[in-house]
Length: 59
Image 1 (cartoon, rainbow, N blue to C red):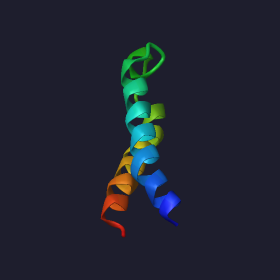
Image 2: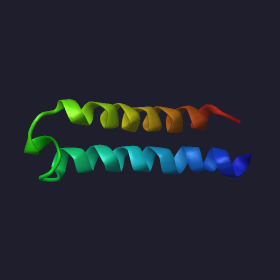
Image 3: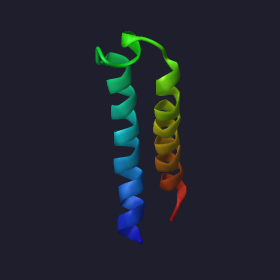
């Protein structure tokens, strides 16, 4: 259980932030065209960051 909490605290926010950074900076990301296809992935990234933040308050 502790391993799962540690994973949620560290890995999920890191992957979420990395995904958002990639979408915003890579030439094939948002800069390449319409934003609409990226919205589900951006939402998922935000959800990962939120779950990671919630895991910090879990005991």
